[in-house]
Amino acid sequence: MQATLPSTVAGIAERLRGLLSAHRAALRTRSYDLPALNSPAVPCEVTTVTASDGARLRVHSYGPADGEAIVLAHGWTCCIEYWNPQINAFAGDYRVIAYDQRGHGESESGTAPLTTDLLADDLAAVLDATLRPGQRAVLVGHSLGGMTIQAWAGRYPRQVTARADAVVLANTASGDLIAETTVVPRFNRGPLALPFPVGRLGLGLPVVFPPIGPVKWIFRRQIMSLASTGEVVDFALAIVRSCPAMVRSHFGFLLAELALQSCTRCLTVPTTVIAGSADDMTPPVHSERLTEELRSVGAFRKLVELPTGHLGNVEAYEAFNDELAEVLAETYAARRMREATA
Image 1 (cartoon, helix red, strand yellow):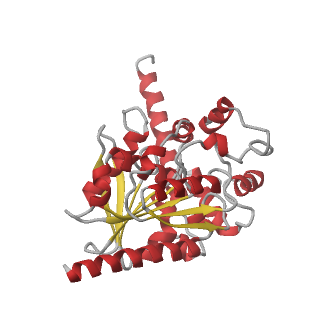
Image 2: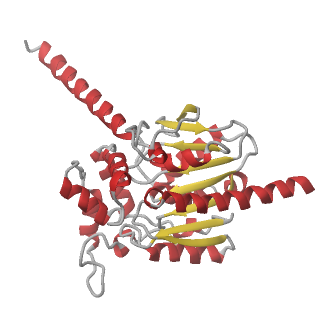
């Protein structure tokens, strides 16, 4: 009996892990009446990229293999599927590459201590594995993804012009997340400041999001905006719920200490900043600061403020896609002109 008990317990634990994994996968791949939210119908090439510490990262590439490239880096508690509205819009004409940040989706967490340098290394590995020799892409980062792109630029400044034609930073920041957040009602407004230890603890809590009415309302109010309704909210909440609570916690503590201001100035290609007017997690003041840093190195292209909360590319996906289409048209038209005159 004593000899068989550990194997029985291990078997039960393995079974539970399998059930949780299947549940999270189902959350990521639900179907909706809004076609933009559904899994892309275009062919997908699945690649496993090995990170510097041996972690295996899930990477999806959609669209023509020889197409001009867009690389999408998702935010905290999200995954590849978060980008469905953009993949569905652009994968017919472009090579759209998206990957799961470590610990998210189907990417492994790895063994190395979690740092922004590690996330920069992950992005560098994805670019090396998916872009052709000499190929450059438009890099698009939402929230943590935008922070990852900034960290990559700071860690690999010589790679910026070698790998990127342009950058889009959406609902993101370079630091001071706790000092500027307006997620907590009545704090960080006027003389009331949220104490850093309290804010750090809040970011690091292994929060769960049961799909019940009050939780959905809080999610709309604090993460999205109350203007977001219906399947857009259902989609966003399902994506966030697919992230393990402990992964949410580990990355939350990382975000509390974020300080990438010097990295932002290493983005020396045309960079567009997109903010949400009702974004409580990364209020527009962060986008204004990013704009100042980009202006200082001549890389600022445009600041756009959409009427959204933190999940702008989902809440207002059509407007977001219009802005991205403008970036792509400008970027690749200029490249074709250079090539024609070379």
